Every structure is written in structure tokens, then in C-alpha cells.
Length: 198
Image (tube, rainbow, N blue to C red; front, side, top):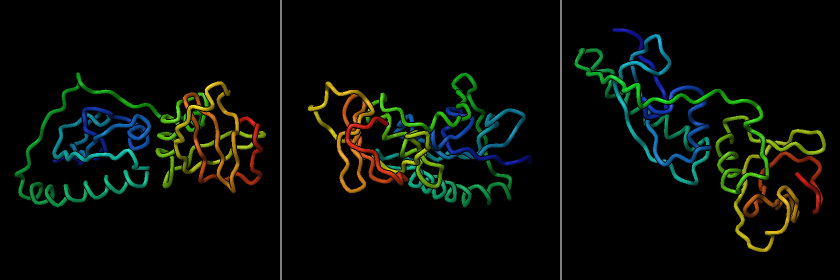
């Protein structure tokens, strides 16, 4: 019958690399898990099963990973008997609707505080465990960041992005393009000082 492939997006949309990470970075509200018969293309074969799921604004990489696993396990229970009995049906993908996500580079995981608070929040969520973590470069060292909070404020409109506004215990408040981010889970050994730039 061929080889059954799997891709955690709503094919033909979002073929390609690092689908869970891009899904969170781009703040998609829905996605899907898709089983398909593999062909010579990438994620382009005829679909055997596709099941949608919703994505919460609070979902991080682990949450999305678990949703993908749970969704796909339910599909497999439905697919296997149909494959065995050869009662399955397939749907050809509309290749005109397809796009392909590129491979990430290391620089894609770097936090740039000239980004909006929401963009930084999505980046950190997308690269949280089980992935490698977003990072900051500070004093020629790469510092992993695992969790941040968006802090809404109107008091720092005239302060440059990346400036450390407060350090409270191990929480670090940093100015972004449109507000502030509080870094609440990180791997700083030496904490920055108020007034430093990240």
C-alpha cells in the first residue's frame, strides 16, 4: 500500500521544517495532525486522516506537543482497522494552497527586545522544553530563557528597547518595543543590573 507519513499541521498548509515551533511563533489558533501516504515530495502525499485541534494563547511547546500526540493516537485507532481491511479513503492535497516552512537557524531563537512583547512571548513559548530554549546574548554569553510574562505599562514609552528596568529576586523586567517583558525563568548566573541593556 505504501508508507504512511505523519505531519503535525493541516496539510497542505505549513509543510516543511519545525512545524510545532513555527505554529507557536506565528500564533496560529488551530492546527491539525495529518497522516498521508508518502511520495517523492515533502509532506505532499494523499491524505488518509486529518484531525484538527485548537491552540490556546497560553500553550507552550510541551502543551502543543502533548496535543499533537493525543490527537494522533486517536487517529491511529481509526486508521489501523481501515488499513487492515483496505477500507480507507484518501484525499489528494491541493498543492496550490501549500506553503513550506523553512529550517530554523540559531539566530531565529535569539530574543531581540526591539520586537514586540507579544512576539517575544511567542518565541519563548515556542522554544520552551522539550526544545532548546530561546536565548539572550549578554556579556558575550548565551543565556537561555524559558518563560516570560507580558507586562502592560504606559510609563516607559521614552525608554529604549532592551533596557533593564527592574531586578526583583531573579525576575528581570526589560523594556520591549511596545511595553515590557518580565523574564521569570532563565539561566542567568550573574544577574544584570538595573540600567543594563540586553
